[in-house]
Image 1: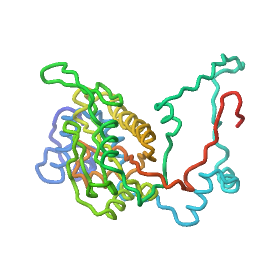
Image 2: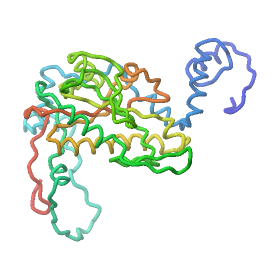
Image 3: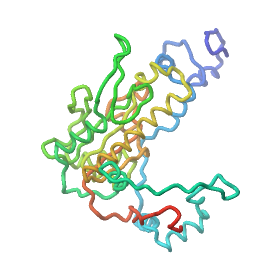
Length: 338
């Protein structure tokens, strides 16, 4: 079968069978074959690399649930807090992990560098940055805190006009081609002066656009569903669904082998910026790409081709206690032994 031209074939049923499974395209005007052809045309028009499209659609999830039963939760909590007994059982089953540190030298030669710890708000935020899995449900964020998070993490700080039709943006995180195709949809559970619900953050206007009205309980349930049953994130005061506008990126990087990877990296850059801003504001933060992206896309009315969910991050006031958060001890190079 040719890839770029139509041919007439006699169909004994096998051709239709292959077309319905997306392996061939048909000029048939009847559904579902016509709909499958339209999706293929849409993917080609957007500039999707076929291999990236296969990865994206083959790894999407709906209805995944990581909720653990009481026994599993106890064991998982013990492992996360370095319980010798639980960790021992895990090692017995799976063997020890690869070494924490790696050396590329075989002869032991090295150049010891001076220890030069820095001080200041950035370095304090780096030291305080960590994933929070226990949030205080009773403490809301203020509207000012939410506004600061949205502007500092996702807001636009500048622009450059490269052509009458081309403007690139400057934000607090890097993005391939300065295109910044990742959108933020705040899922608000508990923010003073703001109704619970799903919103879209308008970067152009630094404003929130309502998408779905929710109760506080509904927002908590939605977040648990969005994060595939990671219920410890559901008590965060606000979460941010990160989506990719594929046309914005693929307009420049058409069928490029790394275009899809840059979208994932953009989301990762934004998550680290959120961690630092959250730490500076005294808030606990989280990031996860273990999500039910199909559920999210359905809720936001996204088709998964033009725009789709990539990850979920969020923040709130830490409860100060969670068995799922390890207690870290200081590490000093060349002094601490592991």
